[in-house]
Image 1 (cartoon, rainbow, N blue to C red):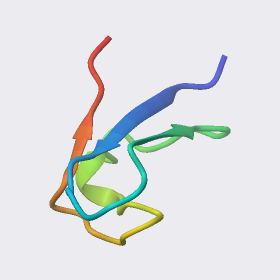
Image 2: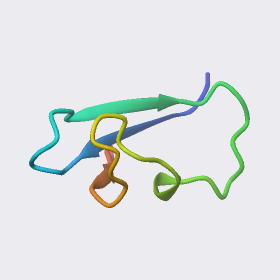
Image 3: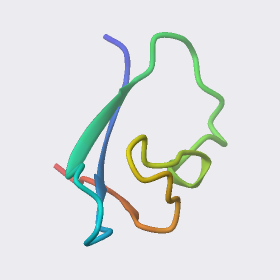
Image 4: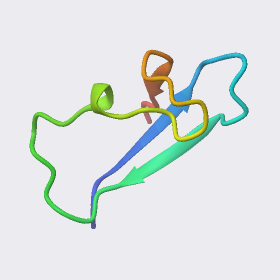
Length: 52
């Protein structure tokens, strides 16, 4: 099963609360949260990974 990364946007002005990234191919080990931006507001500094 492909890996997933669940992310929360903590920007108070952003309307998106959570989204998931589903990896359908092998991602390099160096890829992490800092490589992504919120698809709604575009910010990168307000993202937090959901720890289950």
